[in-house]
Amino acid sequence: MELSVYKIDGSESGKKVVLDESIFGVEPNDHAIYLDVKQYLANQRQGTSKTKDRSEISYSTKKLIRQKGSGGARHGSLKAGIYVGGGRVFGPQPRCYRSKLNKKLKQLARFSALSYKAKDNAIVMVEPFAMEAPKTKEFIQILKNIKAGDRKVLFVLPENSANIYLSSRNLPEVNVITVNELNTYVVMNANSMVLVDGVQDILASRIKR
Image (cartoon, rainbow, N blue to C red; front, side, top):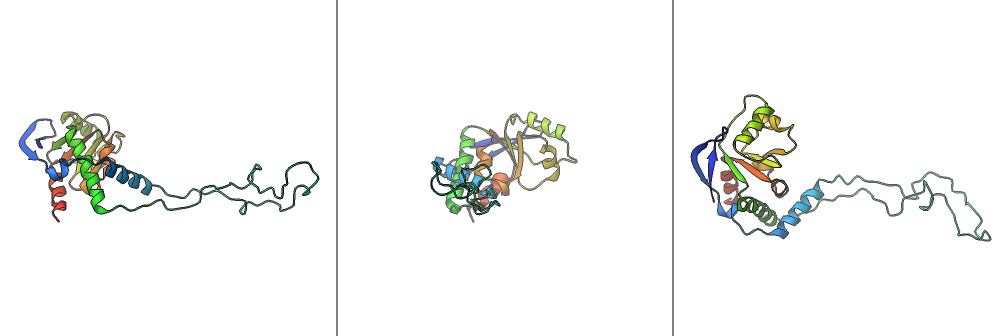
């Protein structure tokens, strides 16, 4: 797939970039994408939810009513889950939600997500640029110039740039990351991608290792 590289003013730079078919042209595997996204979201969970069971409730242990003869059910403690303020039955306990996927599967999922974006013509290439200071208005104008869209834009940089990141931080529909942070979830969660020229070479070099 061949893409034109744009300048930040929206004009074409004259350079053409050919995206690696082994990254942006694979046959997408939906199940691999599902597994990788599920793992990513599970790994974000803290797993700190906790409720008290009846052994942790601080109540009197006095028997409420006599065992027989009341005409009602037997009750032995106010700590039982059927009472207000009693212990929670089968409530959540602290646990780890993290899981593991094979590297090849994660790679297939990531390439499948990128291939979907390439197939949908949702990738824009822009030449490397720098911002002298954090300017949100200036960054918005760049996105308009290159026609990146106004909803869920993923901006991928070859390396970290504090000014570009700070310029986008107030924009809820824009996510600026480096190529090292690229994963299946952020790609699938975006409507369009903006790749700064050089990102595709870094991705290609990692395959050949």
